[in-house]
Image (cartoon, rainbow, N blue to C red; front, side, top):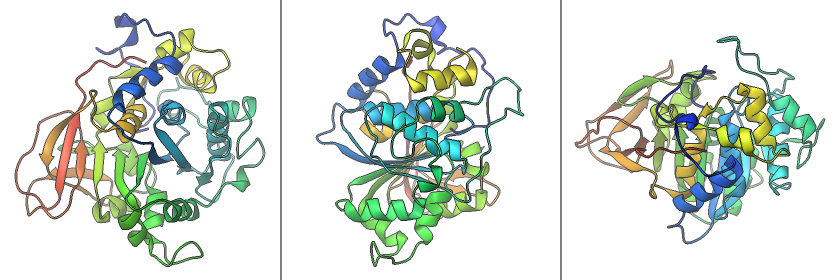
Length: 353
C-alpha cells in the first residue's frame, strides 16, 4: 500500500461508472497481466516486499503475482511484524497453487490486528484470511517459522542468475535496508550491496510524490531506513508514485461476482464491504511484471529522487548522469542533466478490476 487507510471517494475510474464484461478480479487480472507481459520472453524472477496489514491492495498485488503465467515468484518478504500478515500471505499464495513459496517477516512478531483509527470505516482481514484459508508454508499457528527477511533475500539472490531478479517493494523498506547492511554469511561472501549489484535487475518502489511528496510507504514505518534505501541503492530503480493508483479502483468485480472461495475476494469484502479500493500495489506489480507494456508510459526521462530523514521526498534535476534510476508518476515531466538518470511514467488508461 502507499497511503494511510483511505475512505472511499468516487472518482473517474469508479467501477460503477464503467461497463465491463469481466466477472471477477480473478479473470480480469489474468487478462491485464497477459496484456502487460506480452513482450516478456521468459518468466521474470520476482520477489515481493509488502506491508500486508492495513490496506487490502497488497492482496490484489499478490493475486497478480501468483496467477501471472510469466512470473517466477521467488519469495515474499513482509515489513509489518504481525503474525497474521505472514499467515495471510501464506494462505493467499497456497490458494493460488504456491504453497512452497518462502515467506519472510520482520521481528519481533506481534499478534496485533488492524484497527482503522483514521476513519473508523475499514475492516480487518489478515487474521480472518489466515484462519479461514490456512495453508502454505506457514499454516495457522506457525508464523514463527517464517524466514528472517534478510536471510531470505540473500538466499534467493545467491541462487538466482546475475541481473535476473526484480524486487517489487509495495510497502515499507525496512527489509531492503537490512539487505543493504548485510555482510558475508553462509549463503555468500558478498555483502548485501554487492549481492544487489550483481543479482538485481530492477527495484520497483511503490511510493513517493512527484515532483515532491510525503508518502505513507516512506514515513509509515521507519523513514530513516527508507532514506537509506532510496538514497544509496546502486542500480535501476523505478518509483510508482502515489498518484498512479490512487484513483484507479479495483476489487469491485471480484467482490460482486468473483469465486466465493477466493481469499482475496473476501479480504476486499472484510476491508471495505464491497467498496472498490485504490490500486497502488496492483499497478506497481503489473509494471514489475511486464514493464511499460500498453498500460503505462514514461512521464519523465531524468531526475534524482531524494528522501529526507522524515520520509519526505523530492525529485530534482541537477548533476550528471551516472546510473539508471526510474520514477513512476502521473504529472509534469522533468528534463535535464541529473545526478542519477531517472524515468517517470504515468497510466492514462482506465483500468477496472
